Length: 248
Image (cartoon, one colour):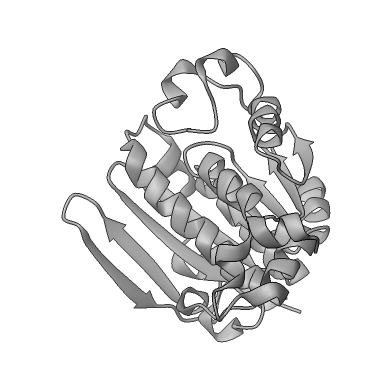
Protein backbone atom coordinates (compact mmCIF):
# COMPACT_ATOMS: atom_id res chain seq x y z
CA UNK A 1 0.00 0.00 0.00
CA UNK A 2 1.56 3.29 -1.09
CA UNK A 3 1.47 6.61 0.77
CA UNK A 4 -1.50 7.91 -1.24
CA UNK A 5 -3.57 4.84 -0.35
CA UNK A 6 -2.57 5.11 3.30
CA UNK A 7 -3.75 8.71 3.37
CA UNK A 8 -6.94 8.03 1.41
CA UNK A 9 -8.01 5.19 3.71
CA UNK A 10 -6.60 6.56 6.96
CA UNK A 11 -10.03 6.88 8.61
CA UNK A 12 -10.58 3.14 8.13
CA UNK A 13 -7.01 2.29 9.10
CA UNK A 14 -7.47 4.06 12.45
CA UNK A 15 -10.40 1.79 13.30
CA UNK A 16 -9.10 -0.84 15.78
CA UNK A 17 -11.09 -3.61 14.07
CA UNK A 18 -9.87 -2.65 10.60
CA UNK A 19 -6.29 -1.41 10.52
CA UNK A 20 -3.94 -1.76 7.57
CA UNK A 21 -4.73 -5.46 7.22
CA UNK A 22 -8.45 -4.86 6.92
CA UNK A 23 -7.99 -2.18 4.26
CA UNK A 24 -5.55 -4.45 2.44
CA UNK A 25 -8.20 -7.16 2.38
CA UNK A 26 -10.65 -4.72 0.81
CA UNK A 27 -8.12 -3.77 -1.83
CA UNK A 28 -7.66 -7.44 -2.74
CA UNK A 29 -11.37 -8.25 -2.69
CA UNK A 30 -13.74 -8.93 -5.57
CA UNK A 31 -17.43 -8.17 -5.04
CA UNK A 32 -20.43 -8.92 -7.24
CA UNK A 33 -23.28 -6.41 -6.97
CA UNK A 34 -26.52 -7.72 -8.48
CA UNK A 35 -28.87 -4.83 -9.19
CA UNK A 36 -27.83 -1.21 -9.68
CA UNK A 37 -31.01 0.47 -8.50
CA UNK A 38 -31.73 2.32 -5.28
CA UNK A 39 -29.72 -0.19 -3.26
CA UNK A 40 -26.97 -1.21 -5.65
CA UNK A 41 -26.06 2.29 -6.81
CA UNK A 42 -25.32 3.34 -3.22
CA UNK A 43 -23.53 0.09 -2.38
CA UNK A 44 -21.32 0.52 -5.44
CA UNK A 45 -20.40 4.07 -4.41
CA UNK A 46 -19.37 3.07 -0.89
CA UNK A 47 -17.46 -0.04 -1.90
CA UNK A 48 -15.62 1.84 -4.63
CA UNK A 49 -14.75 4.65 -2.21
CA UNK A 50 -13.61 2.09 0.37
CA UNK A 51 -11.02 0.71 -2.03
CA UNK A 52 -12.54 -2.64 -2.99
CA UNK A 53 -10.22 -4.05 -5.64
CA UNK A 54 -12.79 -5.21 -8.18
CA UNK A 55 -16.51 -4.58 -8.53
CA UNK A 56 -18.58 -6.75 -10.83
CA UNK A 57 -21.70 -4.77 -11.75
CA UNK A 58 -24.73 -6.74 -12.92
CA UNK A 59 -27.98 -5.20 -14.16
CA UNK A 60 -29.88 -5.64 -17.45
CA UNK A 61 -31.83 -2.37 -17.26
CA UNK A 62 -31.40 1.16 -18.58
CA UNK A 63 -31.60 4.35 -16.55
CA UNK A 64 -35.08 5.90 -16.46
CA UNK A 65 -36.04 9.39 -15.36
CA UNK A 66 -38.11 7.92 -12.52
CA UNK A 67 -34.98 6.21 -11.16
CA UNK A 68 -33.09 9.39 -10.38
CA UNK A 69 -34.63 10.38 -6.99
CA UNK A 70 -33.22 7.23 -5.33
CA UNK A 71 -30.57 5.82 -7.69
CA UNK A 72 -27.98 8.43 -6.85
CA UNK A 73 -25.21 6.98 -8.99
CA UNK A 74 -26.89 8.45 -12.08
CA UNK A 75 -27.60 11.91 -13.51
CA UNK A 76 -30.05 13.21 -16.11
CA UNK A 77 -27.46 12.67 -18.85
CA UNK A 78 -27.57 8.92 -18.15
CA UNK A 79 -31.27 8.49 -18.92
CA UNK A 80 -31.61 5.86 -21.63
CA UNK A 81 -28.13 4.42 -21.05
CA UNK A 82 -27.47 0.93 -19.75
CA UNK A 83 -27.11 1.13 -15.98
CA UNK A 84 -23.84 -0.77 -16.12
CA UNK A 85 -22.34 1.77 -18.55
CA UNK A 86 -23.62 4.74 -16.55
CA UNK A 87 -22.32 3.19 -13.33
CA UNK A 88 -18.89 2.61 -14.85
CA UNK A 89 -18.68 6.25 -15.93
CA UNK A 90 -19.65 7.57 -12.49
CA UNK A 91 -17.48 5.18 -10.51
CA UNK A 92 -14.44 5.63 -12.73
CA UNK A 93 -14.66 9.38 -12.15
CA UNK A 94 -14.39 8.67 -8.42
CA UNK A 95 -11.20 6.64 -8.81
CA UNK A 96 -12.78 3.21 -8.45
CA UNK A 97 -10.62 0.13 -8.87
CA UNK A 98 -11.30 -2.51 -11.49
CA UNK A 99 -14.85 -2.57 -12.86
CA UNK A 100 -16.35 -5.47 -14.76
CA UNK A 101 -19.78 -5.18 -16.33
CA UNK A 102 -22.55 -7.77 -16.70
CA UNK A 103 -25.38 -5.96 -18.53
CA UNK A 104 -27.66 -8.96 -18.27
CA UNK A 105 -29.90 -10.80 -15.86
CA UNK A 106 -27.72 -13.34 -14.11
CA UNK A 107 -29.37 -16.73 -13.64
CA UNK A 108 -28.45 -20.40 -13.91
CA UNK A 109 -24.93 -21.36 -14.90
CA UNK A 110 -23.99 -17.76 -15.70
CA UNK A 111 -24.88 -16.66 -12.18
CA UNK A 112 -23.06 -19.62 -10.63
CA UNK A 113 -19.94 -18.78 -12.64
CA UNK A 114 -19.90 -15.14 -11.56
CA UNK A 115 -20.51 -16.01 -7.91
CA UNK A 116 -17.64 -18.50 -7.91
CA UNK A 117 -15.24 -15.79 -9.12
CA UNK A 118 -15.77 -13.31 -6.27
CA UNK A 119 -15.22 -13.09 -2.52
CA UNK A 120 -18.65 -11.70 -1.63
CA UNK A 121 -22.01 -10.98 -3.26
CA UNK A 122 -24.28 -8.02 -2.55
CA UNK A 123 -27.86 -8.82 -3.53
CA UNK A 124 -29.50 -5.50 -4.39
CA UNK A 125 -32.15 -7.01 -6.66
CA UNK A 126 -35.87 -6.27 -6.45
CA UNK A 127 -37.65 -9.62 -6.82
CA UNK A 128 -37.82 -12.95 -5.06
CA UNK A 129 -36.91 -15.03 -8.10
CA UNK A 130 -33.53 -13.33 -8.39
CA UNK A 131 -32.94 -13.33 -4.64
CA UNK A 132 -33.63 -17.04 -4.37
CA UNK A 133 -31.27 -17.75 -7.27
CA UNK A 134 -28.47 -15.62 -5.81
CA UNK A 135 -28.91 -17.20 -2.39
CA UNK A 136 -28.67 -20.70 -3.83
CA UNK A 137 -25.61 -19.88 -5.91
CA UNK A 138 -23.83 -18.38 -2.89
CA UNK A 139 -24.68 -21.29 -0.61
CA UNK A 140 -23.49 -23.83 -3.18
CA UNK A 141 -20.22 -21.94 -3.71
CA UNK A 142 -19.74 -21.12 0.01
CA UNK A 143 -19.50 -17.40 -0.80
CA UNK A 144 -20.77 -14.83 1.74
CA UNK A 145 -23.97 -13.03 0.72
CA UNK A 146 -25.17 -9.66 1.97
CA UNK A 147 -28.82 -9.30 1.03
CA UNK A 148 -30.96 -6.18 1.37
CA UNK A 149 -34.52 -5.43 0.32
CA UNK A 150 -36.64 -2.30 0.50
CA UNK A 151 -40.29 -1.54 -0.22
CA UNK A 152 -42.31 1.60 0.45
CA UNK A 153 -40.87 2.86 3.78
CA UNK A 154 -39.41 -0.37 5.16
CA UNK A 155 -36.54 -2.71 4.54
CA UNK A 156 -34.55 -5.67 5.78
CA UNK A 157 -30.93 -6.80 5.81
CA UNK A 158 -29.10 -10.06 6.51
CA UNK A 159 -25.82 -11.85 5.89
CA UNK A 160 -25.71 -15.47 4.76
CA UNK A 161 -22.25 -16.64 5.79
CA UNK A 162 -20.79 -20.08 5.10
CA UNK A 163 -19.32 -20.05 8.61
CA UNK A 164 -22.80 -19.81 10.19
CA UNK A 165 -24.71 -22.81 8.81
CA UNK A 166 -27.01 -22.97 11.86
CA UNK A 167 -28.48 -19.59 10.88
CA UNK A 168 -29.73 -20.99 7.59
CA UNK A 169 -30.04 -19.02 4.39
CA UNK A 170 -32.39 -16.57 2.69
CA UNK A 171 -34.61 -19.40 1.48
CA UNK A 172 -35.11 -20.57 5.06
CA UNK A 173 -37.01 -17.34 5.75
CA UNK A 174 -39.53 -17.57 2.94
CA UNK A 175 -41.70 -20.41 1.65
CA UNK A 176 -42.41 -21.33 -1.94
CA UNK A 177 -44.87 -19.23 -3.92
CA UNK A 178 -43.77 -15.71 -2.98
CA UNK A 179 -42.31 -14.94 -6.41
CA UNK A 180 -45.62 -13.65 -7.80
CA UNK A 181 -46.64 -11.89 -4.60
CA UNK A 182 -43.83 -9.36 -4.87
CA UNK A 183 -43.75 -8.71 -8.59
CA UNK A 184 -47.45 -8.45 -9.43
CA UNK A 185 -47.87 -4.71 -8.87
CA UNK A 186 -45.95 -1.46 -8.93
CA UNK A 187 -44.52 -0.59 -5.54
CA UNK A 188 -43.56 2.78 -4.20
CA UNK A 189 -40.36 3.38 -2.27
CA UNK A 190 -39.06 6.36 -0.33
CA UNK A 191 -35.64 7.17 -1.77
CA UNK A 192 -33.76 7.82 1.49
CA UNK A 193 -35.02 4.52 2.93
CA UNK A 194 -33.36 2.71 0.04
CA UNK A 195 -30.24 4.73 0.78
CA UNK A 196 -30.37 3.82 4.46
CA UNK A 197 -30.57 0.10 3.76
CA UNK A 198 -27.90 0.35 1.05
CA UNK A 199 -25.49 2.18 3.32
CA UNK A 200 -25.84 -0.53 5.95
CA UNK A 201 -25.54 -3.20 3.26
CA UNK A 202 -22.23 -1.68 2.18
CA UNK A 203 -21.09 -1.53 5.80
CA UNK A 204 -21.91 -5.22 6.30
CA UNK A 205 -20.04 -6.13 3.13
CA UNK A 206 -16.98 -4.21 4.30
CA UNK A 207 -17.11 -5.90 7.71
CA UNK A 208 -17.30 -9.36 6.20
CA UNK A 209 -14.47 -8.68 3.76
CA UNK A 210 -12.28 -7.21 6.50
CA UNK A 211 -12.97 -10.12 8.86
CA UNK A 212 -15.02 -8.07 11.34
CA UNK A 213 -17.76 -10.17 13.02
CA UNK A 214 -21.38 -9.14 12.48
CA UNK A 215 -24.54 -10.31 14.27
CA UNK A 216 -26.37 -10.20 10.95
CA UNK A 217 -24.67 -13.44 9.95
CA UNK A 218 -27.10 -14.97 12.46
CA UNK A 219 -29.92 -12.41 12.56
CA UNK A 220 -32.36 -10.64 10.27
CA UNK A 221 -32.53 -6.85 10.74
CA UNK A 222 -35.87 -5.21 9.94
CA UNK A 223 -36.40 -1.43 9.74
CA UNK A 224 -39.59 0.63 9.43
CA UNK A 225 -39.01 4.29 8.60
CA UNK A 226 -42.67 5.19 9.17
CA UNK A 227 -42.25 4.49 12.89
CA UNK A 228 -38.45 4.66 13.12
CA UNK A 229 -38.53 1.23 14.73
CA UNK A 230 -36.09 -1.57 14.04
CA UNK A 231 -35.52 -5.03 15.42
CA UNK A 232 -33.22 -8.00 15.07
CA UNK A 233 -34.71 -11.44 14.67
CA UNK A 234 -32.64 -14.57 15.28
CA UNK A 235 -32.54 -16.81 12.21
CA UNK A 236 -32.68 -20.60 12.33
CA UNK A 237 -31.92 -23.09 9.62
CA UNK A 238 -35.05 -24.73 8.22
CA UNK A 239 -34.41 -28.49 8.27
CA UNK A 240 -36.55 -28.80 5.13
CA UNK A 241 -34.81 -26.00 3.22
CA UNK A 242 -33.92 -27.35 -0.24
CA UNK A 243 -30.95 -24.97 -0.47
CA UNK A 244 -29.32 -25.63 2.90
CA UNK A 245 -29.36 -29.34 2.14
CA UNK A 246 -26.83 -28.59 -0.60
CA UNK A 247 -24.36 -26.81 1.70
CA UNK A 248 -20.77 -28.05 1.23
